[in-house]
Length: 329
Image (cartoon, rainbow, N blue to C red; front, side, top):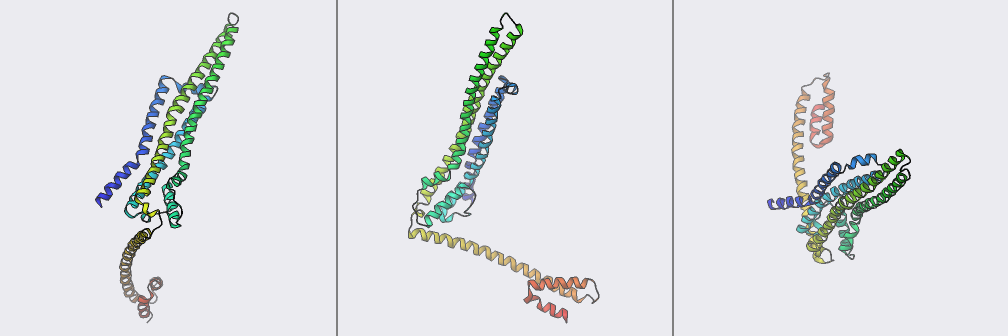
């Protein structure tokens, strides 16, 4: 039992790898973002950006991180369940997996395998695991797509910024020696365009091309690892259960008998507890009979005591019938 608990704790620690890796990269992302905020004054420019491209890039980055965090939490729960399923399959094969029909992906995968095996269908574990985990892959791909879109928006911002710069320089050159105010406005517009070109490229490449893509890689690698674990578990420890045979039926019967014995033990404990409760009920009934005999006919507590006695009679009529007969007499 101690060895089993130690192995389970080790499995639980391994199940936290996805969340730990995600949090480590998130802290690194915060460090990078802080450096950009201090050294490049990114947030100051975002607040003054009239094109709103940097706003869109920053919003897509926050959305991608939020989706990746939710997926990382779900995958961590899947890893916990997968390691428990691995332990049950090691001990008793596919028939030993308890609490089937759960909300986890690994539970649905196990249920599908069991259903195919029960119907003697053709088993293709690799194809089935790809189908069951395809939704998680699509989520990771969506986060990666957001990163690619952020890079594209950064390039669009670069072109737009260069266009604004060229227009500003054109206006400044036209006002050179004619209107000093127009010259200053043109130069200011040109500098603003250069800022748009620089900051959109910086934010798109750093936030989308590096940070968000790594978040996507972490979750996608976790999904691949989870698939490998489930495939290995059933191919190594339950290969005999995947093909129709008499041995598989015998093992399934043994597991069913073991589960039945466990339920019988629980039922025995429940019956013993019920006997203790009934013994207490008998003592209460005897005490109630003694107290009823001491009450007079016009005592206001007598109807209440009679109603309680009738309730006890409905619970255990065979035993309390003599009590009511004595009370009526």
